[in-house]
Length: 313
Image 1 (cartoon, rainbow, N blue to C red):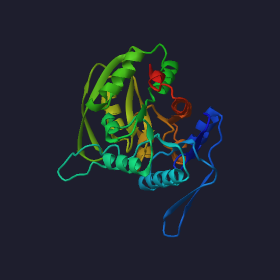
Image 2 (cartoon, helix red, strand yellow):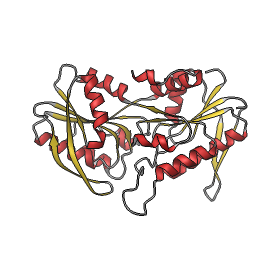
Image 3 (cartoon, rainbow, N blue to C red):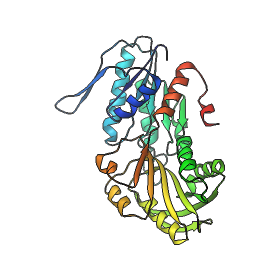
Image 4 (cartoon, rainbow, N blue to C red):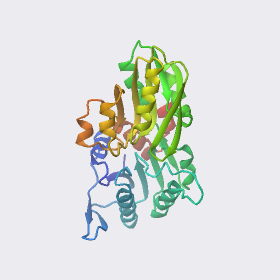
């Protein structure tokens, strides 16, 4: 980590501090302020001239505020003569708007990628991005980090000796579910999902054998938790012993936590790509495991010019 520095915005300071602790480097000194009209001002309080700077910032709610923080911090670093700026975006907001789903609709994930590139960021690191093609929206290198190793270690420890089945909540997540099932040498299943409206899901069928098994739903994010809860009900109807959800990003908007508490899901395992509220911490069904060491190792390898992909082989 010679001549490399780490800064962060306000979106996920605990994760940034945990990454710095893993790397045994101090968190960079910067000040973020708001003018009375809400404008964001960033001041870098130490020299970054000639340094490779990593900015850790999840673009989680409030999404637009955190995107602007990232862009303004980047501009400040660029004008302070940083040699290179890598944006570490554990959760990439707007990723669900990755294609036109109806006439005259935006592709906002591409717009955000353009903003990030134009601001002067030279590389992006993100975790379990919602759609893989988003990597192609950037004209700069993108390192796609997977939370799978963390979840798989947890599953091996907790469900050792059990007959488990990995379940994808929809067809789009089958590649992710298949990779889990391959490593765990387990069965594979899928639920058939329909979306009549945004944030509304209907589970029609379960494809695959879940009877008598411990079912583990794997997904990239849980927002309103509607899909996971409906999938859990459908899987239990088909005879599964219990249902757990592993999801990288815990958006948990609206009354998601209350719905989870009242649901048939035994446990929801999240990473800390998005900081959780005290309400979520008080929920007995929600468990958060840290991705800090994995991100820290990726940052160390980027700074040293080493391979990232070997982390997942």
